[in-house]
Structure formats: structure tokens, C-alpha cells
Image (cartoon, rainbow, N blue to C red; front, side, top):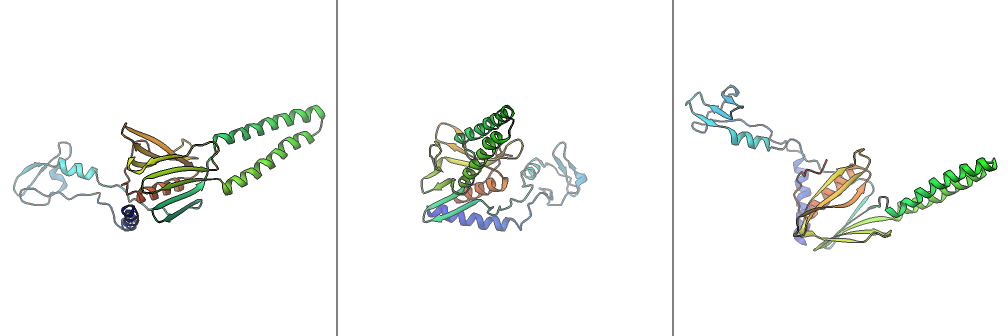
Length: 248
């Protein structure tokens, strides 16, 4: 696991260096025969040809243009740790803690509140008093809010990485099964936003020998949290960040 920790430190050093280097998004072409620099009027970009006025050579510039298209268009910026994510490194372990997103088992609380709200209105009209409405809605809201505060402080998703596996743990579980993936099978991580940009999903691409599959690690309420976690995991596992069609 030492090679992973070494790569983690090295990539973070590289991030810092990359922030002060400008990407090379231009190219000055020279004649391959006599090395004379070519003015732009001697380039035919439609046919990918160049002509030298010094030695009258005509040559292809297709490879030069292809390399130019592959040049980076922007600097990869390191994302600093946002509030709400805790990272720990102990011996060969990498551990990240963050608040749980809404679990399926928690949705019944929302439906129960809606039922209590409707029932409160009906009872208040029938008894001509707001007491049933207040008792059913306000009382239920207080209980739900107290539960939410407890959930916010103590209910966490834990991502653990050791020398073999990446483990996804919910504590408390809320009927969600712990999952493990061999780190050698993880090809890439990426972030994808919901259509309204209110929720950001962190995915990883896993290949266990039967073809690639996209596994959702978690969802978060901000892009910075999701992209920071992607950055840290890729750096620790020495995974080069590349763009995939699904990310945005």
C-alpha cells in the first residue's frame, strides 16, 4: 500500500505545480525540410497542407493539428476540502466520513407528515377548531425535526480503502447492505449532476472481468463535495483523471 500513499502525495504535489503552468494551446509550425517558420497564410487548414516559401516544399500538417486539438483547454484546479467531509489516513487505510443522503426507509416519514397534514385540516374543519391541525402537524414536525438533527450529526456514510478493497458503509445501516469493490477493478471515478443541479452523484467505473459497470458511491448536495471526494480517491489510488461521456 506504500505505493498508493506515495502516489497520493505525489499527485497532490503535481496539482499544486499544475496551477501555475499554462496549458499549451497553440503551435508554431516549421517546414520539415528547412526548419523555416511558416506564416499563417502558407497554411491550408481545409486540406491540412503547408507550403514553405524558402524551399518550396509542400507537406501535410495533419499530425500537428491533431496534437493541437488534444492540447488541454483549461487548468485542472485542485479542490480544497469543503465543510462536511472528514478524511483520515492511518497506516494503510484511507477513510472518508460525510453525512448520509436520504435513505429509502426515511421516505415514509415524509408521507406520514403529508397524511397528518391532511388529516389535521379535515379534523379542524369538522370540530371547528385548529387544535387538531396544530397537534397533528406541528407536533409531528417537531418530532421529525429532532430526528433530523440527530441524523445530521451522527448518521454517516463511510468510505474505507485498504490495500485490497474500497468499502461503502452506512452507519446506521438503514437496511442498506455494505458493499466492497477490489481496488484493482476500479478504472475511473466521475461526478454527474441531477438535471436541476441540486444533487450531485459520485460514480465509479468498475470492471470485474465481465465488462464495465457504473456504480453510484453516494449523492451530495454540492459539486465541490462530490468533486473533492473524487479527487482524493483518485489521487490515493493513483488513478489518472480522464473525462468520461457520462460526467458533467
